[in-house]
Length: 47
Image 1 (cartoon, rainbow, N blue to C red):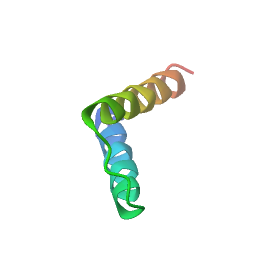
Image 2: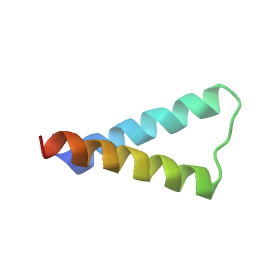
Image 3: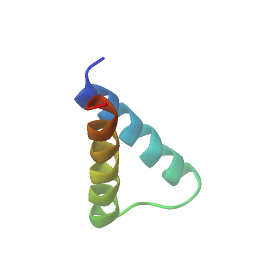
Image 4: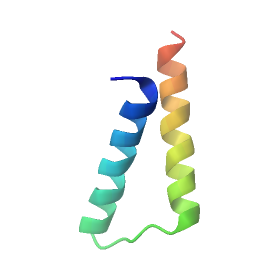
């Protein structure tokens, strides 16, 4: 699985978990989560 695919999967799981707990993320929250996941993968893939 590539970095982008793995990042998308983690993002999807995180958003689903938020929705299950009753927190519907807005566009701003989803963008912040996406950036956080991408940043995390960038750090781990360059090490």
